Image (tube, rainbow, N blue to C red; front, side):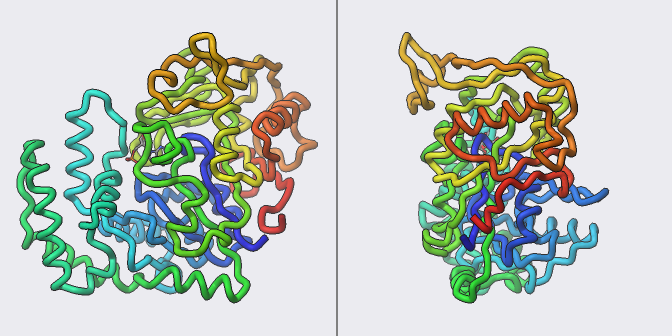
Length: 428
Ligand code: IMP
């Protein structure tokens, strides 16, 4: 199989960055296809830590990297991230980075709206406050400014007028000052020469790449349960995060998606609001948060932590067409005497093998757990299954059975090389 699509199979923060970085060695091009700089990917290479939000993780390996049309791009953030990587010795040139010319921009007014709405809301989504949702709203509302518009002053002027006709009443309703059209135009014109050198028809480039027999690695952001259709709506992000979006968000047809690798954390976390049936509020939850260093890469918020939810991941396996999983952070469970795995839910005397869509039903769910013994030895840094304690292997095997997908990779520390390869997604 030529291509691999990596997606988060839970609520994000499963450790996709490390796996994408590791797999990008075997790929010719790495492509982001949804989300924006709400994503947070941490890559640890030796003693260097790279924190990426928008750039595909492949850039660190010097791989051709594409920001696809499905991504919403904050140009100010993009130049900042490029500069930051430059200061860490990674130089990003247009030979290395391609920005789809039909991707939509996130503007400061989107961030204002995101933050003002969150501040005013009683039932907060807990967004990253970076303007992602409002930018996608404008995309679907057909009033967004796209990368290519930066090269066309006349189009830009007309688009700003149309955009402000929508945003001005919204801003006034929220007590925000009006945006000065001439000021915004000047800012975008100043930004244009910094962004446009990277802009190209990414779909065309990908078509050529695939036709020449090269391999594409798609890098998803967030997780399947944050998908705007399939996630825990309305506590979701504003894009489709499932694997199928790799095709629409890049312009490569659906056959190009290839092997779908679901990244799965050995327990569960989420940031922001919304249902979380296996959430823990006790010492075990604290253990997972502290040992797992569960703080948001983008916002620094503490993540909510809980037991592994096999029902949720089983749902994700179906939604994404997952071929195999990469299990991460197993070592965080080291030393816990007993472990629980959620195998389904119960609500009002009814059993559910999946997360029902209704908010009331979701709130009423209690998890049904299976229990097993933990292990006292360390799994950190293990490089083969033989290095794992018997109970850790049992835990992994039980997860495979319950979710209906095999483990292709096991990540045993944030370091690139602490990875057990069971089957190579590019060869499968
Ligand atoms: P937004 O994407 O900023 O609109 O936030 C919507 C929801 O998605 C919130 O619950 C965020 O915490 C969550 N979210 C967005 N990006 C990430 C991510 O990269 N990891 C985990 N959660 C995320």
